[in-house]
Image (cartoon, rainbow, N blue to C red; front, top):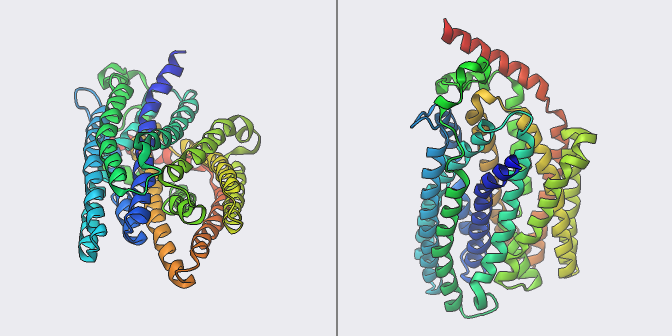
Length: 459
C-alpha cells in the first residue's frame, strides 16, 4: 500500500508533463496552423525546438549523479527545472498570441520573426524540461529496489498517459464556448485564461509529487552497499568511457531514436488532419489526444502482464510495431472514406499498439541502465527520445508542407496520407530492429568497465 501511494505520487510529475504536451502540441499547434494560418513548417520548427537542446539531458543526468546539495541529488534539479518550464509555458502562450496578431494582420515578415522568437522560447522550455525530467527518472531508480523498479516505472508512465488524457479533456472544457466558435476573439480569451491557470496548477502538483521523497545521501548508508551500487562520483569523461564500453549502447540509441521518431511523426499533423479532413473544431481535435491516450494507457498497463512474460520485450516490441503500422494505415483509410467514427477507432487502436511498443521499450531501457550511473544512462536514452521526437515534430510539419506542394492545394488528403504511410513503415522497421537488443551483454560490458574505473579510483 505504501509503495502504491509512492508510485502514484511520483506519477503526478509525469502526468503534468503529459498535460503540458497536450497544451503545447495539441492546442498551440492547431491554433497556429488552422485558426491563425501560420505555415505548418514554421509552427513545427517552433514547437519542435524544445527537443533541440536534448543533448543537455546527459549533462544534467551526470551532474545529478554527483550533486550533493544538502544531501540531495535529484530534487534540486527537478524543482528548479519545473519552475522554469512553468514560467516559460506562460511566456510561450503570450508569444503564440503575439504571433497570431501578425498573422491576422497579414504581415508575413512579422509572422516569420515572431515565429523565430517563439522558437527561442521553446528552446528555453526544452532546456528546463531536460533539467527536471532526467534527474526525475534517475530518482525512480534511487528510491526503489531492483524488484520494485519495473512496477514503479509502469505506474509512472501510465500516469504520463493519464496526464495526456486529463489535459486534453480539461483543456477543451476550460476553453468553453470558444471551441465551437468562429470568433477568434473568444478563442484568444480562452487561451489567455488557460496559460495563466495551467502553470500554477502544474507546479503545485509537482511540489506534491517530489518534495520529501528523496532521502539525503548521508542517510542512505552507502557504506553498507556494494561498490557498484553506490552513487557514482565519476567525471563526465569517465562516465563517457562506461557508455562506450558496450556496443549495445550505440545500437539501442539508434533503434530507440527510430522508434520514437516513427511513433510521433503524426504529432504535428494529427489535429490539423482532424480539422481539414473531418471538419472537427478545436476542442474536438484536442480530444483526439484523449482517445490516443486511453489506448496507450491500456497498452502500457496490460502488456507487462499479457505479452512481455510470454514473448519477451524484443518480440513484444515487434508485435507493437506491426500493429501500430497497421492502425496508422487504417487512419488513412478513414480519411479516404471521410468516416470520423472509423478515424476515432483507428486512433484508439493505434494508441493501444503504441502502448504495447512503449512498454516493451521501457522494459529494455531498464535492462540497459546501470544503477551506479542512473542519471547518465537515463540521460542518454532521454536524449535519443527527445531528439527523435523533436525531429519527428519538425519533419511531420515539413512533410505536410512538402506533400501539400506535390499534390497541389486541392488534394489536402493526399498530403496527410503520405505522412502517415511513412510513419507506418518506420514503426515496422523499428520493431524488427529491436529484436537484436541484448541486455545481458550490455550489463556484462558496463559492469566490467565500471568496476575497472572504481578500482582505479581506489588505487
